[in-house]
Structures are given as C-alpha cells and as structure tokens.
Image 1 (cartoon, rainbow, N blue to C red):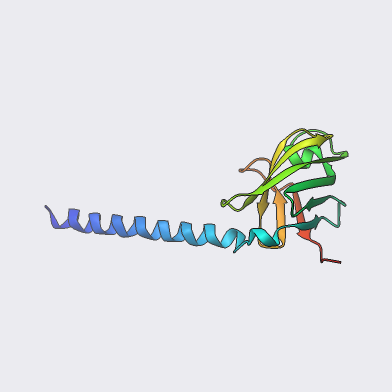
Image 2: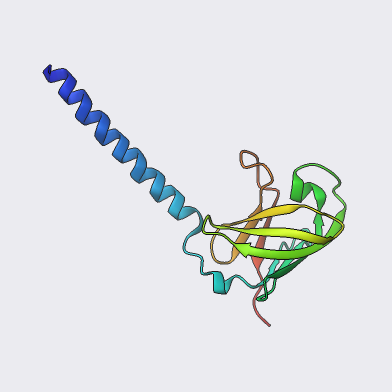
Length: 136
C-alpha cells in the first residue's frame, strides 16, 4: 500500500466520524429533552389565535388553525379539528384527526419542551409556531 493511500484512508475515516458526531449533536439539539408526561397542555400562537390542546388521555383539539398552516396549501380561514395524539421518539407529536373541518394527520414538531411547530413540508418553512401556555 502506498503511503498516500494510507493517509487518505485514515483521513476519510476520521472525516466520517466527525460528520456522524456533528449530525448527532445537531439532531439532539433540535428539540432538547422532551418528557412525554409534560406534553399535555395548551399550545398557543398569540398572533394568530391558533391553539392546540393535548389532553393527558391522548386526545387533542385544534382551534383557529388554517388548512394552509396544516397542509401547506388550502384556505387561510381558521378551522377546528380534533382526534388522537401520540408522542414518537422522533421528537414529534403525531396528530390523527378524526373529527372536525380537517380530516388529516399532522406532525407537530417539538422545538423544546414548551415550543412546537407545524411544518407540512419537511424541506419547507415552518407555517405555525405555538408556545405552551402557563397552567392556570
């Protein structure tokens, strides 16, 4: 084996390790540590009035959130919908709508223990950010 090939092999291997470590740091830092038991509550966008209530029994209700914010297309008129929710280990809450004006399934991404957002297209912009309201 030539000396240059050995250096290239070692450098390439360390480069891969560096990329994997960087990816792990970025991924873990996106949502921070989320405890599923702390998810239930009201998440609100004060600017739009949109609100998602995650109940401890696994049900949710969404009010004043537009079809466009949920799907990335459609009306900007506020709608209401509800159904079941489940936290995944991929740091998002899966909303399965089964009642109301929208019959869609939605991923509610975690941006920390008190912030969530809608992003219908994973490569597109966030369409709605919501912050957990203080408990009464």
